[in-house]
Image (cartoon, rainbow, N blue to C red; front, top):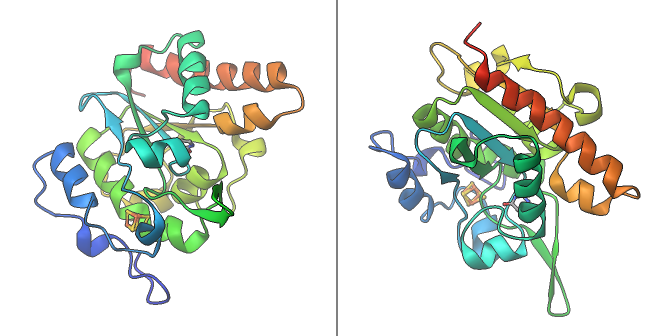
Length: 224
Ligand code: URA
Ligand code: SF4
C-alpha cells in the first residue's frame, strides 16, 4: 500500500521480474521506500532455505542485525533459535524475516536505542514481505509479536488474543499479497524480545515454545 505522506513505500523498488529470493535481496539494498534507510547501516533482508515451509516474521532488525546485515543474530535471535529447537521445528524448514527491513532507532549519546516502527513504516515495507511470501509459498507463517501481526493481520491484531491458535490466511492479507491458492496457516506468538523483558522469563519462554509447537505440528499435518 503506497502512501503519499512521508513515505512512498517499497512498491517501486520491488522488482516484478525477480527470479528468486536472492534477486529480491539485492534489490532491497536499494530501497528508499521510507526514511529508515537513511540512518540504518544496511538493509536486513530475510534469510533461510528457499524451500522453507515455515516463515517467521519479526519486527525489524536490532542493533546487532543492523551491523551484520542478517536477521535474528542478536540476543532475541539466540533465544528464538533455542525456542525453535525446543519446539522441535527443523531449522532447515525455517526462513526468518522482519516486517520492517531497516533498523529504526534513536541516538542517545552514542547508544542506538531501538524504536518501534510506526504504522507508516510497516505499510511502506510490506511489499518486501509480500514478495518474499510469493517466492516461498510457506505452509506456516509465524507472527512474532505486534508489529508482524499488524503487517499481516491489520491494526486490530492483538497477540494476547490470538496467540497459539492456527488461523487461516485472512482475506485482508490476501488482498495485500498475491496468494492465488492461499495455502498458508498462521500462528501468532510473542516476540522473543518480550521473553527477554518479561518479569518471569521462564513462564514467558514456555509460552513461546508452546505456541511454536502448535506451528510445528501444522507441518506434519497435510493441507486442510
Ligand atoms: N528482533 C526482530 O524482530 N528481528 C530481528 O531480526 C532481530 C530482533
Ligand atoms: Fe525500504 Fe523497508 Fe527500508 Fe523503508 S524500511 S527503506 S520500505 S526496506
